[in-house]
Length: 309
Length: 237
Figure 1 (cartoon, rainbow over the protein chains, first blue to last red):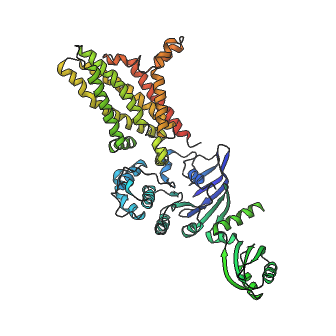
Figure 2 (figure 1 turned 180 degrees about the vertical axis):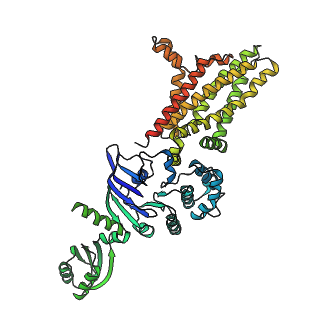
Figure 3 (figure 1 turned 135 degrees about the vertical axis):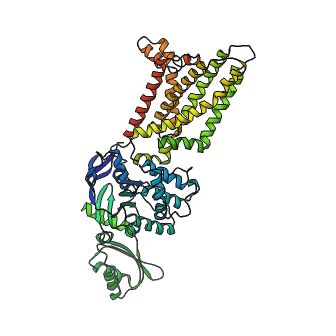
């Protein structure tokens, strides 16, 4: 349904998005994952028609966005990280205004309103003035305005940023619910978020698409791990056991005053179970095992190393 | 028209709109009381002429102050995205914003009608002069609003927007000074473009100058067109 071909976007001479291609089927929930400055927002803005591509094309149902008439924008709903809201209006007035702006009649907007309120979890807030709402509810009003005209493509930039844990869980449900009517794009720099909501993940790094697949497959691709181990036993035995393990690419062992050992280990493939078994077999005791990099870092390390190789 | 309606509504719903309305009426009233109504006996027509002279200044200032929000504020708060993603052309966005602000300015100007009516109580002025004066005020006001809309489209924030709008407006007002010293044909062009000196003064005296109405219309069209182009170019930046 959406086809992006060799898309690049420059700001002056800075290349924010670099030769990105992908295509997406209807009713998918696609996550854009990347660190800050990876090109997520720029990509989403190009998809939303807010920025013209420097080179490459974006097609929605075969229509090139660059040639699409103004009316085509009805098919798309875009919610930036900071929701665009008119503070002086009530939720109802605002959603009605945006609906009319997108070509719905007042009556149509009113008819759609209860459904949108339900989807965005805004019950009881219909007639509150927007300036009185907390950040979490402002995000929801943002969602409500983005789906009032039933767009076929919904684009959400960092929908969970600034939300508390309870609101994050609710927002996940909201995002999943949107896929019933639309194809959904979500960006985030938090991997677990993408895993929860998306059926597919595109990983961007320095403007380039470095991975594309289901969240599980992606985690699998990032195969290495960095561990911190707390051990008891003989330091020489620990060093020997680590050196002998096939997937260990780097290790250090330091002995503490209390006779305990601390070891840092780099693994090329994450076979920590086998490593632990080998250490125990060498007569060492395991007291602690920690990942020293979070998941996302590992994935990026894995993916960018692959890119360099 | 939806955009114009919301804009008008937002002027009526915010302190800003009411502050400008009150400010214009207060200053107009004070100037009228202090300068137009003097103890010396004067012709009513001269008093009215003075009234339009003062009103033209407040109208233009109000025009710039009303428009500084239009697009610049939306860019600042990010709500411009709503207009950018809406299935409406940039031209209709700019036109809607212009009409919203101009509508509010027209409302303010209409409220000053009590002053000419006061003159009517103790004196005698022709309705033609009042009508022509207000027509001139509308033309001048529309030009100021269009220039301000352009400033708002160019600027990233409201202060800059007001500065750009004010600068362009003042330059065009003072064009006649340069027009007097510059050689023809440049001098002629500058004098012709001077919004106030050449074009507004006849209205104050009750003369409707078609040439001036054409100029005001052209100024509105030109600045709204430029504002539209600026808004369109943002997608390419």
